[in-house]
Image (cartoon, rainbow, N blue to C red; front, top):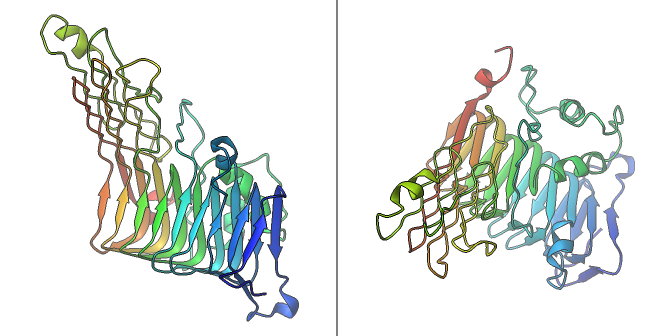
Length: 380
């Protein structure tokens, strides 16, 4: 199957569309090539060797509410996203049993602006890692399904021959905005993956001059476990996460003690990355002028993560000026990197956003978890 890059498939008049190339007689050379596609609610692609050579997008005419509920899902043995291709929808799941390759300039972006976990003792976000240490040189398909069943006990069970994307997408959509999963290798070269919650699972990952970006996509202004606080004419405080949010200031000392008492405390909820950075307090109630917190990035790599000149970031957003006072910055988000080996020179950020002029408090720094596989598994 070949759909040229200059061709356009328009599925915006139907809610759900599927492009499915059957693997006849186990033909490993079967190729599914897809050019530009616009869709309304769900687009699913399945093939042996899938090449995405044109943009896959939800039309910009879709409302924000409609857009964030859209899903693009692809399952393949080998998946290639070609140069300068943009994938944009509310949720994306890219799955390959062997390899995923994102070529230079390719982008995967969520249209969802924020996600914010405000539930105490909430279940862990989905992880493909086997906590019992049953690993070889490659992530196994059956192990992946077993882990999904453990974490989503209400889903279908013991149906390992059905299409993986049909089996997993609803569960993962509740946990992430982008999930990239390769049982073999994931190669990224000059790419951008952007949205509130990014999950990566692979046996090996190579990142070169690529960016994972959840800046300002966590809890919005005035939301979160450590949301910013405000007293009277004080500036709004920053949001909290790994540290305390900075308190709001005041030009004179009359209410100084009141200002310094109003700032959120750090929160800690276990050894997994499950909570975003909290939003800063708005200077003007109801106007959402505080900076949003950083989002969540989880990278689970069985063997080697090699990141060269790449950036992984979950920074909080800056506060905006109110009519009289400043607003607080958002807290940095949460990043978790789990691998057997880390190599390369790259940058990882989870910084708090700046408070605005007029006494806005700074957002707290986020959390960074770095785990090594043998120390993470229960029986190691």
